Image 1 (cartoon, rainbow, N blue to C red):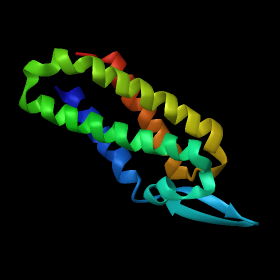
Image 2 (image 1 turned 180 degrees about the horizontal axis):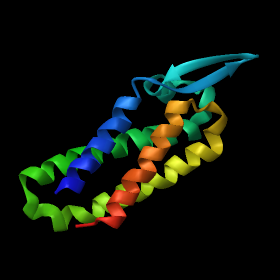
Image 3 (image 1 turned 30 degrees about the vertical axis):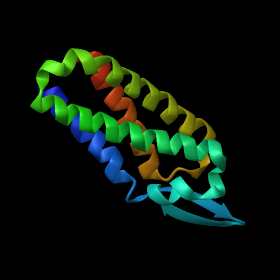
Length: 129
C-alpha cells in the first residue's frame, strides 16, 4: 500500500514539474528556459518532440488517476493492472527518447523528471501487486 502512495507521489511530481523550467530552446547563442507546458506547444522541438512530451504528461495523469481510483476500489486492481504496466512502459520509452532526441534542450529539472520516470517504472516492476 505504501508503494502505491509513492507511485502517486512520483506521478504528481512529474505533472507538477511541468509548471517549472524543464526545457529550454536556443535562439542564436541565447538559451531561453521554458516550462513544460510551454514546451508542449512550442514548435522548437518539432512534432516528434511535442508528441514525446505530451505522452509523458498524459501518461502521468492517467497513472495518478488510476492509482487514486484503486485506493477507492481495490477490487479493480486486476483489471487495471495491465493498462498501468503499459502506461509505465510507454512513459519509460518516451522518457528515454526525450533524453536521446531532446537532451540538449533539457534543464536540470528535466533530467530530474526523467529520473522520476525511471524511478516510477522501477517501483511499478519491482513491487507489482
